Length: 70
Image (cartoon, rainbow, N blue to C red; front, side, top):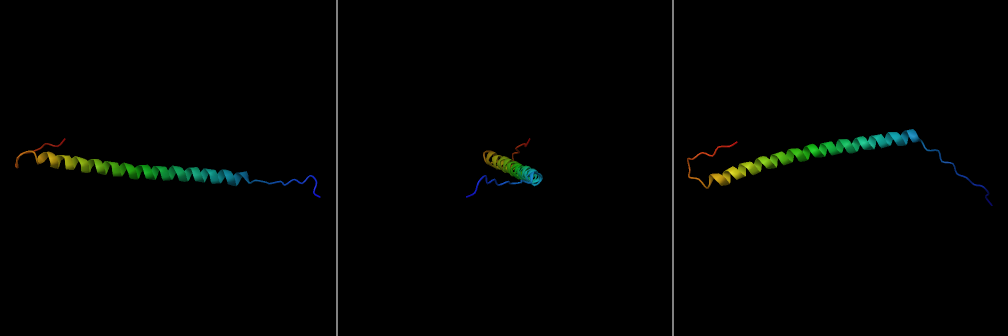
């Protein structure tokens, strides 16, 4: 029979804290990278839409007339 059996676990809190900080840093870095990529894609899509809109509008007018871009 085992009486008063206690298991003591010594946690290395310094390593856990360091791993947590690294994980948070990784999440922030990943989030910023993802945000910048999506922002670049969004700006590219806006430019494409604007060009497509000008092309569609220019078809409504006779050839040789100018459409001013702002």
